[in-house]
Image (tube, one colour):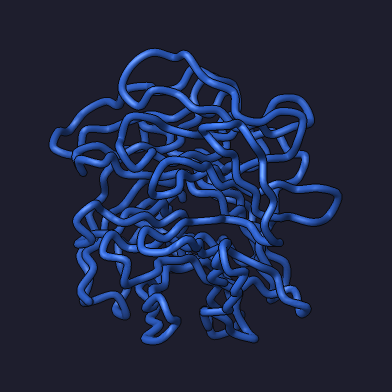
Length: 330
């Protein structure tokens, strides 16, 4: 089951330095970079511990695992910069790192509690959500300079903003009572529209549709494809034993990348964790890409579709999270 947005402040939603408390954590070795099941992949660490990369909270209890599914990574339109969420001075903000250089990152927002974000398709803007009191509000800011923000929503529990391909709408998830649904904000006339239940919306480029996460009756999360003009709804990724969240469509529109739960047999115990999966857009050809005992979360594609960036504690003996890159071989 995936954690929806609740009335948390950002500090409670991200484990930014220490690993999240979890069952049998003392028996799990994060220090290795990869495991034998990942032998076909090359893993490159992109950030350092000094970047203080946020790790979404993961909660384990017995054979159940819950995690925050918000997207906290994105790659610039030119493919040269990585944006990530970082915790510094008791705040969480978006920082940007030049992928061609080693060194420090540039702070892109000057807020208190940024939750998640996405670049606009033209690369000029970043839309993000931020916790303010008992609400989560959506803003837009320039992707390259200045801290001036345009407020998009207010007074609600809104998160996971992402632009439509034509930049006419910003899709987002809104929590009301115990229900989460997909909404959109029209950038031209300021109208708000509501569509259907779900979270983690990600629009397609080739048709008026988006993929999103939904909970089924058994409490497992699935990946759905929703056409918001015809109303057609199709479940494309589902498993009675697993939950799936955070779908992201590949640049060529052929693949969907997502996070899934996974059970690791530790011999004397079963350890639940999160891994990265991929499937074709129609749900066929699903493959598990990572198998590490670390929590692999918030995956995004490189702009050419050759690589996948994600957050993980792998390679760190003390469980510190960093951004990693792996190759996509399909």
